[in-house]
Image 1 (cartoon, rainbow, N blue to C red):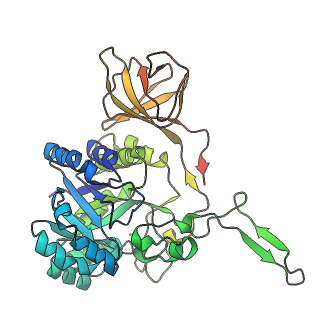
Image 2: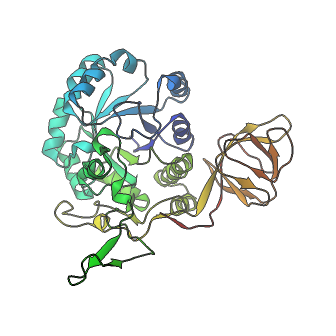
Image 3: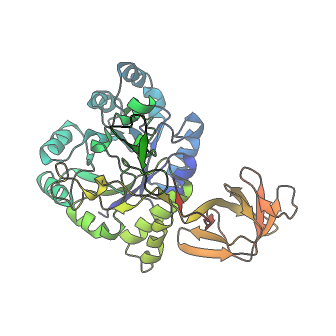
Amino acid sequence: MAIELLSPAGNIEKLETAFAYGADAAYMGLTRFSLRKNAGNFSDDDLERVRALKERIGKKIYVTMNILFKESQMEALHGMRDEIARWPFDAFIVSDIGTVPFLRKNFPDRQLHLSTQASCINSESARMYHDMGFSRVILGREASLDDIRRIKDKVPELELEAFVHGAMCMAYSGRCLLSAHLAGRSGNQGDCSHTCRWNYRLALEEEERPGTYYPIEEYGDYTTILSSKDLCMIDHVRELEDAGLSSLKIEGRMKSVYYVAVVTRAYRKAIDMDRDADIYRRDLFDVSHREYTTGFFFSSNAIDTPSDVSRPTSYGYERNYIFLGSVLGRMPDGSYRLDVRNQIRKGDLVEFIGPDVPNLSDRDLILIDGEGNETDQLDHGKPGYIRTPLDLREGYIMRKLSDTRFVK
């Protein structure tokens, strides 16, 4: 069985994009009970569109119900049985074991996947969860390649999944109280404010001069002293597969459609050993990201010994391209209708990417507004069209080089 590529879907548009750009499966959250409360998520309004998509392409969809449930939330979950039953989910991703009896009783045909929040990183725990009814464990990010191999050897019937790309948390498998303490928003309830990635100012107070502070500065006024690096295992796909993983998971339900597209596409090409895989790989260094690391995969004692990931990144997000929007389709007159997300100006060198198209570009686009008139710019949220000799397809994504490489 080929290894699965699992991509994030923060909303219906990202779900469609994930599948179009090569994901075998996608994970999404309902409006409630998801650890990405602010990702947009899915409501009843999206149900028919999701069902139609699944029927058309036949790929798998997993739902995240991975918060740590309070008593009132557990009661609410029991009241949502009929609502949940309407969705075409293949598996539930959960961390709170109290949900297991309810899910097994009411949805015996759906799989149970253990969330990374449960911090499973050894074979004894993995076996216990399998005996409990879990078909897959999403390992804690602290698990090394050697750990994965040994767990798989001891529990071969259990599927193992691991995050291989995207943001990492400074806390143990995401169990962090920092956001709740500083912002009143609990990461364990899906409302993380990403407090570890805020900008902090350090200062020295001299004993003889109380109240007089001498700032310690790095990269201007701030240093991100708590922020972890981003995970990137694009160069180690074969090693991940050989270790026994069944699924490679990309983080990013709160990231843009552009991020979902280029990251999914890059890993798809790497898994397939596409001859042009390196061309698609380059996009990972142009999409918005923090300094990359291989995390704990190559550390033999990750829990007790500081890893490369725990050394704070020295700068903010790096971004070489600006996401401009996507192509919605071709009009009868030959123009293309756009979903504009950032301003497009006449004379901009606009690049177009597709699932199997690394890059098409045109600096001489004819921009057309919603009234059908040529214009010097198209703006976010307003109807827009273009004329170009390029052969574009629905779902192609537009971008242009950014004037600013680093963003806080």
